[in-house]
Length: 115
View 1 (tube, rainbow, N blue to C red):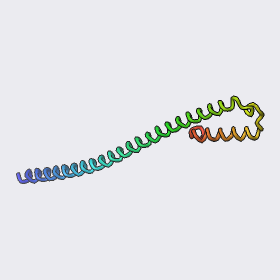
View 2 (cartoon, rainbow, N blue to C red; view 1 turned 45 degrees about the horizontal axis):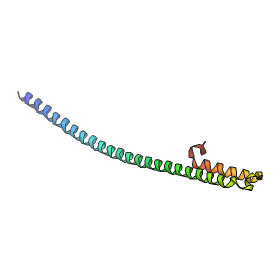
View 3 (cartoon, rainbow, N blue to C red; view 1 turned 90 degrees about the vertical axis):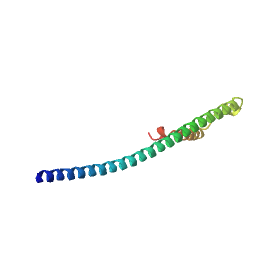
View 4 (tube, rainbow, N blue to C red; view 1 turned 135 degrees about the vertical axis):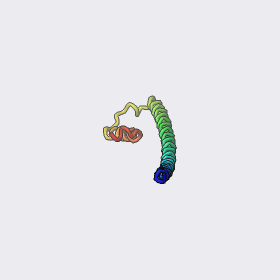
């Protein structure tokens, strides 16, 4: 009978030890989980901020494109009745203007400029 009580006491002590370790593990897991959730929230905030920056940049790009179109239309309108518009432009000048416009176009579109 004494051996039975001893065995029960050992089993009970072992069960308490296992339960205490499980509780500590659960707390550690919960702490890690909370840290990861905090990092996920930070990443979500960064994504939202970056998406807003992208949207703002796209809007600015559209506005600049519209301004460019308006200015080109104004220039075209002014050149319609101008005798200089029908005169020959030296190749060096036209090449320079073309290359400048091309570089501006590529610098405004980073996807094309990296290719």
